[in-house]
Image (cartoon, rainbow, N blue to C red):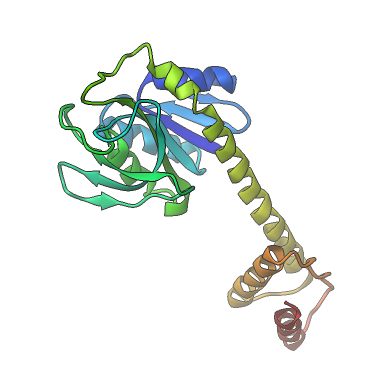
Length: 241
């Protein structure tokens, strides 16, 4: 699953149409996406991002338009640093690929930075209450520059031209979920066969993760009742990779 946060309805509409999302209690959904439209500004972004995440805790993408002093209209960037121009605070979201840029969040439209928006810092502050940094993603598309003012009619077209970015993120989050689902299922099976302390459970989870990364088949779990035999079993797994 992937959560999507947009500020404006005209940013959301191409996504809603492309992925055939249906509105349920103010959230647009299908089997792989939950989308909320927050309204403009960092306060509204924070409130409605928190509302979404209170119901659906999944990796969350803030996608939308941005002004730029340096880039051309329709260039898109993942965000590696957010600066709130009111407070001076900095935030550091997840980096998906090498095409990244920093963004300044402002309260009033006017000054242009490399990338400028009105929601990013509010979105990040709210999302970070629920998610790890590697689950918070921002992607901004340049819609206006000092020489090219924002045109509402252009915005849906700009979003539409970057829908492949959302599709790729859905695939990546699905792969992550599959990766950890296999590990958690194996761990659940092991716990039915042997009594593990919390420390041993964490140790086994780490070992299973290493097995998965190195493409080593998971071990067969047999019933073990003695504590010493459990210790020996975990020790043997450590030697196998």
